[in-house]
Image (cartoon, rainbow, N blue to C red; front, top):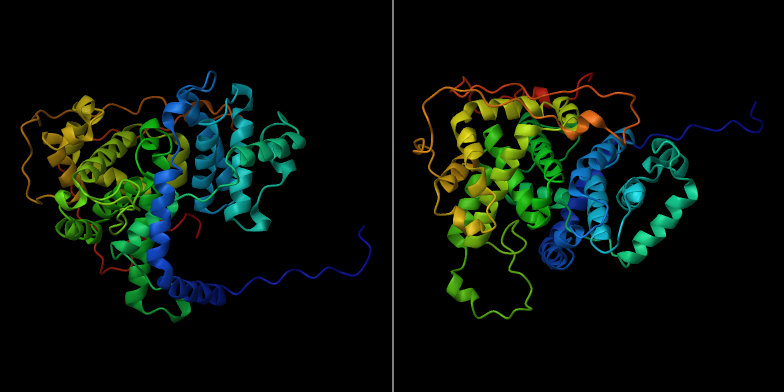
Length: 436
């Protein structure tokens, strides 16, 4: 029994007022948009994690990364944290592992502490996990004092520098620069056209965020700029949803890009030349990198992990992905067959190959009526089943068991599929979470 005066329940902040304040903040921040992009470009060039230093870890290996990421994604979902919190958490882990030796028994401790730090940096105070909750999630493998000590050690190692252009920020920047925007006015005052635009933005954001989270699992994505990953995710999302804004914006930027001769005399220490969402500038090399990133992301979808499938199937992203792969089944097969050429160390070698044409079609930045290249075979076959994923053995999960969940077989043939119309306000109904 509790004594004393009755405690009043906290009043919920009005949704209408919250959205109006958010819209007012966006208008005020528009004045500093160029300065913010320039500062993000400087941070991206200076504070990128070093994957080669992580290779030198004596105990922590790359095959352990999917297990930790699955566990952190489950924690992130259970605590309902902001999307930027997850990306900041992974960035803290990578930067710390690039500077300090991490033992295998402390790998989960580093991950949970990074999520704790990122939550305090990005999220609301009420949603940040407590030390007791973190200890319970780790099955009391670490006591509460160890999280505090690890927090101080991580912050001291990173020199208290947590600002970095995250995948979520770069994705939102890419969506805004391509023109896929919406007026964040309350539903009560929304006009039908604005409601359709808002649904389009939510759809592109959901699919693009899926690819950004998928990029967290592979070492290759630590060697390329975050802004290029976000741009490739946005291009793939718009291509899958039948939105031409991202591809047309990239074509416009390519026509406006300065020639290479004009950039030869620039000083080495000058700030990067930001073009649209390309924080480090746009040239032939960045375009080839963009193609390679998109192709590697498509290859990653052939072996989806269980945690990502569960998370994004409820949002309707997985059916969109299956429709896209069924529509471009021959192109996907060509990408799988030419895996060594895609994973080559030199991205410029991609431009002279047939795979570059395939990437342009998949991203809708090339010719729409491109015929199947000679690499395609006319025989009908089946893509292999998804290989066993790391999520089938969740060593960090608090669940007792985990069932296998494989991607359905994709038949190599043309299926009845058409881009989702933008005029129908109900075209995004699968993206509404189940139960709502």
